[in-house]
Length: 133
Image (cartoon, rainbow, N blue to C red; front, top):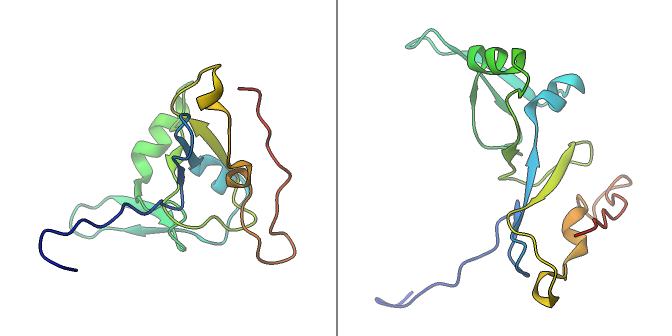
């Protein structure tokens, strides 16, 4: 790339910015635990003495402190969702959260395929999630 040249921003796996909703794919780690997902891992950090958990395939890229997760999980609100940073696998229980809502034309979803998982494999396509927005 030439000095001073700009590179166009590439869309990320977990986000759609085609309309004014600005949607993000999110997953709740609690759902991964409930599914007994084989891709969920945990390790003990020797330096801090803390246990962390994460996704082997980096569907969500953060590593979560297991003690803080358990503490938040005991509350009414729970830990909550984290943004998907990788490509969700067919069994990943993700949802889509819009950042903005509106009634006019600019808020009409023009990318309903974003609500699907992937086209690959026999379980690839999910049913469209045509939300009422």
